[in-house]
Length: 268
Image (cartoon, rainbow, N blue to C red):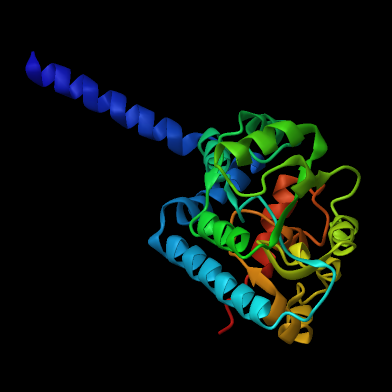
């Protein structure tokens, strides 16, 4: 009897495994799978922890140097930070997408934002408290839509971040181009430092990525970037991905997968 039960159980396992092998995955499911490794790295690797701590430590050193050599001005010193994957950790949202076999959608992102549960990224709070202690004004400029303004502000305040008030939070109302919002801060402040996970968190010129995917722009503006911008790593999503898709997110999942394959270079 015991042997019969084991035999039946083994047949069931074999059938289940065969069913999984035979399951035809949709292009959307395949694209979602590609998010997995990036999210594991971002959420769980010690390397990511070290990288963010190093980046924010450099931000503190650069800010202190700029404050010590600040020229006399009527304008107050300020720093500008992006929010998502810069201050706030949204990797649980990305993990949900991967585990559910789904891809980003505006509705799922809005639902996540309204939960107001994002935690802090390594080094962010230390840098923000340091900036505040120096008398530097802090501005959070994010491309979250203004519809989630209240929840985003609540999230920042729940984390006890300095200067987390309505006047220091600028979300997207019309365009994802942050130039106008940055200029509104510049009108009354000396911006000493920018921090973000996309190059356009510093300047919109980096939105124009050619066949070299914007690397030429980085080298052309290398000195300025090293002096004024702290670049954080985000392998999960970003404008680097848009560049791979030839700046067209409307492409189908299957087209996106093929473009990812085409851009890989095995020639070394």
